[in-house]
Image (cartoon, rainbow, N blue to C red):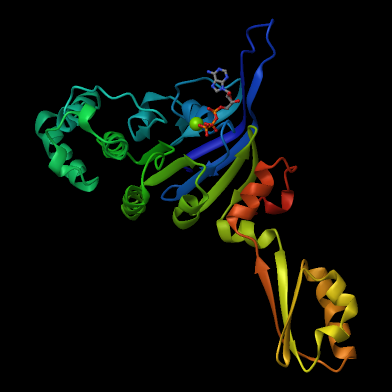
Length: 320
Ligand SMILES: Nc1ncnc2c1ncn2[C@@H]1O[C@H](COP(=O)(O)OP(=O)(O)OP(=O)(O)O)[C@@H](O)[C@H]1O
Ligand SMILES: [Mg+2]
């Protein structure tokens, strides 16, 4: 059983108001999250990330399609008990202390009194807030609030943790702490599904990612596979015993040429241009020292998809 299964999810806002044209927030979105993995749901502002998360938690109904969480329909109480959630803009009861706030959520999760005080101590330790246990939340910094919000999501030791932009508003140290915390959850066998638009956070943590743009999933799979599928972004050819001046054809088409003593460096835009370059080098008596393709990064994929390119079936990973 997958931790999350989403099939053909579509959500339009305002479909009930005939005098306004509806906003299509999600369009035929399908993905699955396996148990024990960290899945990054990446997308620009307004892509439909929060909408998807709210549907998964049963806070909102989809227009069509289906969503299952831990084998039960989204929102079903039997699965909801095993899910922890950090909302995008959590509401905090300002005058509560960190311990009262977490205790309150412990009660909501129906933990008994002794369990609550043990969990509160453990969690404050885990998110590095033990020293602020009795401080009111209104005196917390944004990063501290984000961390106490995370502790709240974990109070009932859930199997699946759904986080909406967990790194938002955090400084690099805070981001690293949250990152380590999420990685620690995976070590304990938990599943984490989180949304973000910070590519580097997704890149270093996630087993798999999905890129959502305008409500459509444009890429889905393991990062290394997504990057491999898109082919080389450029190829570096190093050769020797030839001068760039003797390579007019390739010099005209290369993105970069550089002579360094007996060696020259030629950078071409695609793998298709390698043969052409090599044949000219050989014709002039040069020798090829190395050919290095440079793959694009997740950032390249994200920017290309987010800038309105059509979905590319080749970067829909086969293991997705
Ligand atoms: N309650 C609502 N009523 C009408 N439209 C909405 C509502 N909530 C979201 N939308 C619209 O749905 C689309 C998706 O919004 P959503 O909040 O899911 O995006 P997001 O990916 O979470 O963005 P962000 O990164 O800014 O948080 C946007 O066009 C947004 O304007
Ligand atoms: Mg959002």
